[in-house]
Image (tube, rainbow, N blue to C red):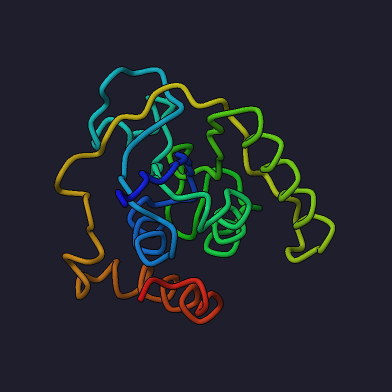
Length: 183
């Protein structure tokens, strides 16, 4: 019997530096592919340098291709809200600017509904002292960030930013979601 192709779904998420998000989602069971890039701005085909100015309107994002029979969009968002601070406007730690905003670029009305539900559930739990400021934006266009940014943490584990910022996020994720890690 031939293997049936998996139905896949795409999620586009912004939660600060895309290197951090990519490193976590690479390890999540049900994730087939993660690509760093930009979404939500006005400039066509922006460069990393242009996005870093904050003038293009883009956010650093990861585009996550996943198998919803293994990992639901809701579970993907539960990880998302655990690995970044959704209560700081245009900021994640020392990374400041609209390019580091917390945003979910939904691909369907169902994704928007699920995102609203997950945000409401997290708000009701009062995990953070401040309200969630994650923006919900309809997905329009994704621009890949380029080879230099692909698998940055995996390729540069001893680089300063990776050790100080990314490694602790990955460790926290692995500890909290042990049962959801790829083998």
